[in-house]
Length: 332
Image (cartoon, rainbow, N blue to C red; front, side):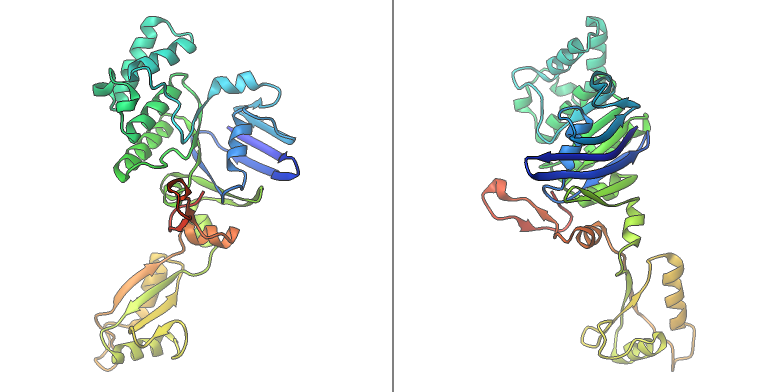
């Protein structure tokens, strides 16, 4: 659905994209992550024909974005983090306006608007203006308007920014339903858990370059740090387990004060089972280690992002007049 080769873009002396190669298969959710200024929005703007690249090539649904922009626009939809709905029109009127712009007949437009209002749970608010909508309702209406054109590919630029947890979950399900219907989703998001939940593949941009690409699990496996944390009831059990597993005193893997051991693992069931089998719970009272608590930790996308870009993930709180606050699970 999307293929770029050597895509380049600079604004003055600042290089924003530096030879970007991407391939996005049809019918998948592809997430593009990166710190602020990495080139995510620029990539979306080029692929959606809003701006032109300085070099390289990009094709969407087989069409060259530079030479065939009109053909590209017919197969895509774009929904940004800022709603494009008209506040002077009702929800239904916004959809009917989009139907008119797509040259649908009055009958077709009304039927499609009714279907979309029902599908996005907006029927009760159809006669209300968007200023009366919640943030989640506005975002759903915005996406519904995008679907009037029956796009094969939708660019979602931070679609859940500012939404409450329930509205985020609703939007996630809508995105999954779209993909189940055959739509391809190109997602940029500031929330790493969102990419983890939704994306089939993830690409990480840093300073205009692609630094990693793969499934969420693939990316996590690249980062060391997976381990099983064992919590013991007393010093005797801790000592027996440490001896059995070869964890020496004074190492970072053993905490005598907390009565815990940290044993490296890839997080798989087989790996965890092997560690527990070595503790030999069925052995004699002299060697058995009983009542150990077990916690499995595998690197998450926060760990991946930090390892690949060197940036701490932060939610940008400057909109509220404060300095950006460190918050796990968010990145611009």
